Figure (cartoon, helix red, strand yellow):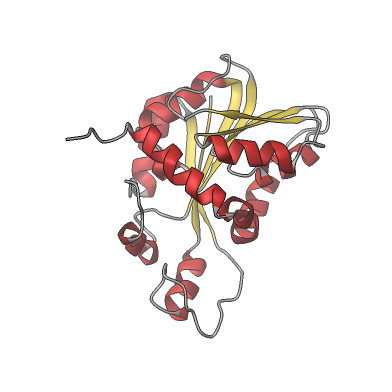
Length: 230
């Protein structure tokens, strides 16, 4: 029998499919309402060095690059096709670069970044604990990690997503994520919810929610933001 692909290879294959279907570019519209409040909370200075873990087609790295014109943004994704598209999409963004890599083995030197952010990626990491330890490694002293996810224990309206995932995903609660942050070495760990103010349509015809009422409830509960300091 053929062996199952390594978890990171399975991730690469799946998100290459997403990239080829154009789903990477669509993420900006989907996630911008919950991401902008997080960027405001980060209070980025002009010369920060920021890592975007699971950067997809590069839209978030572009937004961050605008806020740190004297710094550097590194977008990292397990999908080589996503990275190719990000490089093509944002070739004119001089202070952003995109590399292929997974959270469990970040291809960067220790103690470099002032912030690391991951949006809608962490529950796909094969080993979240190891991923957070790697983020801790590449952050400099006083640097902060920010993880924003919509698939988590307390938002019951996201739990049905597991039926549609083509790859395994970790369904953890807020306190479980906080514990992983602390085990990785982070201090001042906390979490909050970021509601999505986007109005739900009167009729929902997608596959992720059973109806418009569930989508509305999902957005009202909001995404989970966990942060910690090195």
